[in-house]
Image (cartoon, helix red, strand yellow):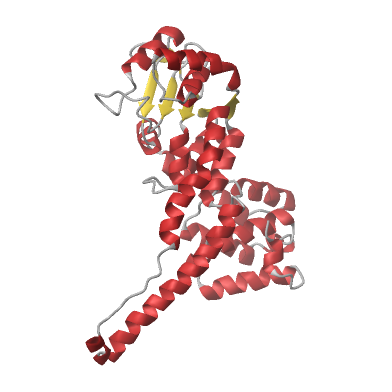
Length: 347
């Protein structure tokens, strides 16, 4: 097939190749903090990588930084939420209003109980790296192009000592990442870089790449570099319809599962559905209805992949599934497993 080039204004490139993307550590860590972006942004990225529209470069330095700082970021917010006790004090004269007075204290107790239960679940997921952010970040690292970093240490040290960006005092991290990208991204191919680090952006316009880095990149790589400080800005610019595309893919897979006529096909669909980290309430309801309407699904529901998939749906969406429906499905699955306790299915 003939490849059609297109013009970006400075250099001409091939439209069929996946675009090269680098995401700085701080972007990944935002999903463990008070970040403003939803985890759906990472799901969008995984979709693009899976469909070979994006090639994500991850350096060993980024992976090490992420692993070093994950718990630090979590603790920074965890200590705030775990210290909330939802206590309230009311003056004596409020006791006259018996109904309202009781509702206030009952509500506080209900919130304390809910918080206690949630914290217990959070503690377990933090320790076992099963937070939703852990799951999708792990998947992204697995499908990324990992770049060995240590061989770029001397180049990074020289860059740092010369005072050239990117970099901080007493740290070579950003310089290592930059040198690794210069060394590994093919010549005449663009790079899209996402970071909140001020060492990368322009001091005049925080939405643009540092002019020194821009000139260095274009001179050495004969290509363009594009800078974003948020994943959502990157998607809005490059893939404005990505969310619609993802939802359509989910709906198609659920529809295929609904009409699946063979065990082999069912296992394949379940494998693809298991890669998805977020389903809407309507999609969850449709997935549950599959068991009721496609009997061959019920026949293999004790198979580990099918059982695990539905276990995760139940555990993660318990709050949005009607109690009776939740109980019915739980009993149905346990029934297929001779009354096996649900917790024993946990991964």
